[in-house]
Length: 155
Image (cartoon, rainbow, N blue to C red; front, side, top):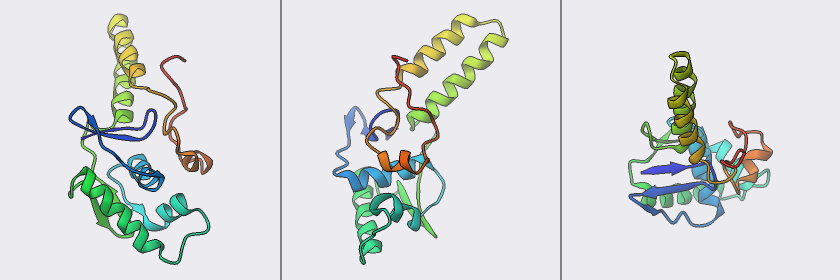
């Protein structure tokens, strides 16, 4: 599985996009990707998906949303870990992690006298950007949760 956040949030299986459905599953996936391999609390997810007016059945609705994502991403992708959920993301599966690794390597390459290799790495990193990061996830931006500036390869 590959995950993309350097543009609209997406999951790719093989060479095909996974149909994530409406905005609620996308928000949950975005939040889990933002803290990949870490627990994201139910309370945080409630706030991100429903704001400060969650329905009385919010816990059940979140469970339905997570269950739907598990069906799409695989049953082992998201696990319950109190007080919330964890999305397991392996190295190289998240475009933001690949971007960060390429930029870090490029930063190290010029010190070793390899400016051409560094430039190639930076071009590869910029090519990962499809549009502004987490495009369409205004709730994450409004809460100040986005870890990276919204850059594009045209910047």
